[in-house]
Amino acid sequence: MFESVLVANRGEIARRVIRTVRALGIKAIAVYSEADADLPYVDEADEAILIGSAQPTQSYLDIDAVMEAAKRTNAQAIHPGYGFLAENAGFAERVIAEGMVWIGPPPEAISAMGDKINARNLMEKAGVPVASGTREPVPDADAAVAAGIGYPVMVKAAGGGGGIGMSVARDEAELRKAYDTARTRAERFFGNPDILLERYIERARHVEVQILGLADGTVVALGERDCSVQRRHQKIVEETPSPGVGPELRARMLAAAVRAGEAVGYRGAGTVECLVDPVAQDFVFLEMNTRLQVEHPITELVTGLDLVEQQLLIAAGEPVSFTTVEPRGHAIEFRVYAEDPKRFLPSPGSITVWEEPVGDVIRVDSGYRAGNKVTPFYDPLLAKLCVYGPDRAQALAAARRAVEEFRIEGPKTNVPFFTELLEDPDFATGEYDTGLVDRMRAR
Image (cartoon, rainbow, N blue to C red; front, side, top):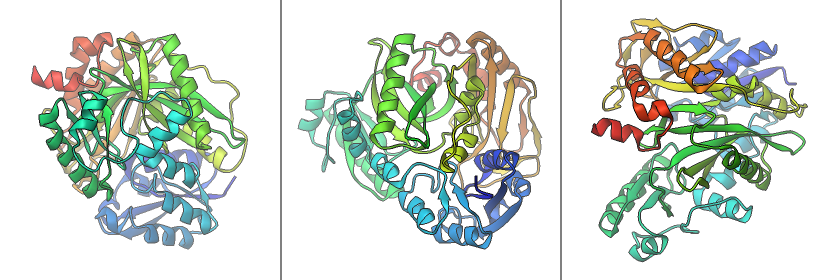
C-alpha cells in the first residue's frame, strides 16, 4: 500500500476520501481553491495545498496545478473523487506517466465509456441490452431517423453526463428544439457537439448497479440502487434495493453489469446505469460511470463495505477484504443542496446554523459547517443524509425523523422538499419513476 494520497477534489467527497485514507494510516493530502480555504476537509487533511482561485478552470480542473501539488508533497497516489477530473482519461494517463498511482479504472476504460455512442456499441456487442437508437453521431435533427427509432426519443449529448444535454422529443415538431438545445449544451459544457438519439422509455425507473473491478481482473456486482427521484434529469434521492426491481430482474441486471465491466477490463469502483421498464420488467443500458458515485454510502450501509478502502486496495494491487457480498436491509440517501426547495435553483450564502441529525441508523456525509460560505462557483451539494433500516418501512421512518432534525440556516436548502417527498403516496409505496418530481410540482 502507498504511503500518501492526494485527493483531487473538494467538499463532501474530499472529506469522505480523507476519512478512509487516514483510517488506513496513509497520509492524506488536500488541494483547495481560494474559495474553499475554510471548509472542513482542508483542516482534516494531513497537508493542504492552495492550487488556485475560485474558478474551477483555475483550480480543480487545472491539471498542471494539481500535478504540481502532487509533486510538491511527494504524493504516491491520486484519488479524483467524482466530478472535476474524475473521468478525464488524459488526467489519468498523466498521473500514471509521472510515476504515481491512479486510484480509478484504466484510462482506456474511461475513454471507452466516456462517449455514449461508443459505450452503447460496446455494450451491445457484449450482450448488454440497449435501447433502439443511433450507432453514430446524428449530424442534424433528422426526422426520418427519429421516426425509425420511434417516438418519443431522447436527444442526448454523446460526451455528456449529469443529465446535462438531454431533451425529450415526442414528435417531429419537438425534435428540432430538442436537438438544438442538446447540441448547444453539449458544446458548451463538454466541448463535444456530437448527439445521439435513443428510444425514450415512458415512466421508466433509473436503476444503477454498483460494480468493483478487482486487481485480479474479476468483476463483481454489489447490488443495485434506484435513482429515479430526479429534477432536471439529476438525482436527488437514491435507495437500495430498488422497490421496483424483483429478484429475477435483479439477477439479470447484475449479470449484465458484470459483463459490461469485463468488456472494458474494468478496475476499481464504477456503476452501470440502466433504465427499467416497470411494466415489462425489463431494462436497457443507459451509461457507465467510471468513478465512485455520489450515492455510494447507501451501498456501504447495506453491504458493510468501505468502497473507498476497496478502491485503494485495488489500485495497490492487493486482495480485497471480502469474499462474498450479501446486501442486507434497506438504505436511502437524500442529497442536501443549497437550493430553493420549489424551483430547485441554487441558493448560495453563508451558513449560520448547521445541526446534523444523529443516531445509529443515520449517516451524514457533509462538506460544510456553520460559518462556511456556499459560493456560486461549484455544485451546491452541502451534504448527503443517509438512513438505514432492516426493511424499507423502517428506513422511511428513520428518514422522516432525520429530515425533521436536520437544521441548516443561511442559504435556502431542499430539506423541506424531502419532507414533502416522504409524504407523497407514490414514493411511500415505492411506485414511482423518473417523472415523480415533475408530477409533484405540477400538483
